[in-house]
Length: 464
Ligand SMILES: [Zn+2]
Image (cartoon, rainbow, N blue to C red):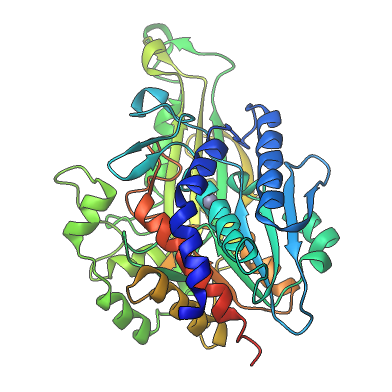
C-alpha cells in the first residue's frame, strides 16, 4: 500500500483541480437526445479530448461513425506483458427536464452541502473525471501506469447507444482489452462501494390509438363514437394484475428462479421498506406492487417490470369538452437474466393487440434497447476490484444488481472473448440521475478516484 503514496498524495493535492474540471465539463449541455444542439455534444467531446491529453494519455482521437455523436479515445500502452484495461464512461447527458423544478440551473454546476448539483455531474461526467484523474495520479508522479490503459468515452449512451453494433464492427480490435472497467453505475448507498453484476434489458413500445381525423364537440357527437382515451386506459389496465404483476404469463415462464445464495446476499444489504421509501421519495401511503413476499431487491434486479412513462392526448390547458382524436403512450419493459428482449416485445405487442376495444386503429413503434446482462464473479478481476474498492472507500465493497440497462457491456465483453466487466460508479440513491436536481456526493467522488488508483495497482496481478 505504501508504494502508492505519491499517487494518493497527488489526489489530495489536486482534488479541487479535478473537481473544477468536472464543473467545466458539466457546464457543457451535451444532451444527445434529438431536438438538442449536436454541437454541444461535439464541444464536450473536444473538452474530454483536451483533458485526456493533459493527463498524459496518448493517441487521443475523436472517433466518428455516420449520424452518431462522437466517441473519444485515448490510450497508454507501454508494457506488452501487463494486462490491458479498457476504461469506459460517456460524455452525453439526459435533457434537463422541467427547469422550474431544479434548485440550481442544470448547466451551472453548484456545490450545496457537499453535493455537486447539475445535469451530468454524476451521470456520467464524474466517471470521465475518475478515469482522467486516476491516470494522472500515476503519469504525473511516477511517470507510468502498472497496466496498459485504453479509454473510450461514448457520446450516445443516453439515447440507447443505437450505433453500438456499427461502432463495434469498426473499432472492436482497437479497443480489445483483458478487462473492462465501466464507471457509470451506482453504489448501493452513499459510502458503500459496490460492484454491479447484473443489468436489466429494455424494450419500448410506442402505441398510438386513433378514432377520429380531428377532435369533436362531445355534446354534439359523444355516445356512439369511441373515446380514444378510454380505449387506451382499457389497454393499459389489461397489462397488469391486481398486484401489479405483468399480466402475460409467458414472460414469467422465461425467468429462472433467483438463486438462493443471491437472495441471502440481498438480505445482508442495508435496506428495508422504510429506507427504500425514503430513497425513492414515494408519496406517503403508497403501497408496493410486483407480487407479495418478494424481496424488494429481487423485484428491482431480478424481476421484469412494466412502466407507462407517458400518455399523451390533449393537454391540461387545452382540454375542452371534446372527444379526442388520438392518444399516444410509451410503454417500457425491463427484462432480466434468461429473458430475450425481442421475444418479450413480441409478447407485449400481442397482449396489447388483443385488448384494443371497438376496432380502434393502433400503430406501433417497437424499439429493442438490448438484452439483460449477468456475470459470474469467479474471475480473479472481481476479487482484485473488490480489494481496490474496499481500500479506496475504507469500507467493505458489496456485489449488487442494477435495474437499469447499459447497452455497451455485453457486446464489448463478448467481442473481446468474454472478458470480465467491472461495473462501478459514484452515483448513490440520492443522485437523481435522469431526473431534476441530479447531484454527486463529493466525498464519494474522491473515494472513487482513490479506488481507481488502487484498482490499477491490483489489476497488474490479473494474469499472474
Ligand atoms: Zn450514464
